[in-house]
Image (tube, rainbow, N blue to C red):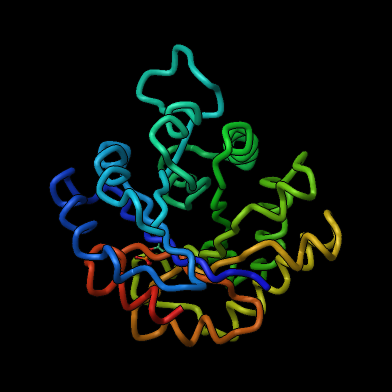
Length: 249
Ligand code: PEP
């Protein structure tokens, strides 16, 4: 049985004070037995957020990491540093990072390995652009990105990975994939995991949907056979909305 996972991706939003006040608002509320609740915050808010959510079941995630442990990489943050802060999850290969910061399938794979090296769970984003969808390439794009991201992992590591299927045209646009379409792509991604790592790993790996998920539609996605949760941007920024997302899962 896969535990549903709701992860908020705050992107480049919230000061430290705003993050702490969010934490006060969700404590004891976005904590529901049987649902994993994760907040992926900007690096600057991670220490305060870990402190503010200490003793709760809400886990903290980062939105990126560098694959090296340390070195001359100005502006970067490593897995060692995240682990030191008490972070559990890290988003890797979000489409905004692939589009604006030149992330490639190769760097995504290096980052996934770095995450495991430091005991962090990667949330790996895959998904097609609108033109790829229109050209009928959704599944081939997702297969390529998934295979590349998981390359070289053990079956046990692959099973622990979280994949977020995020059609790029649905992120922050208010347009969402239908739950049936999202489920079809997610089942296909699961089949690719089965082909690479075996049926047992495929049955364990959690695959989220992401793209304009909100309190009003989260339950519909969660009702699908292969969707194990959601990666949520805009609707994760306010405590009331985030709590409803966790409740909806
Ligand atoms: C995201 O940032 O991963 C995302 C899915 O954003 P939104 O929910 O705002 O579409």
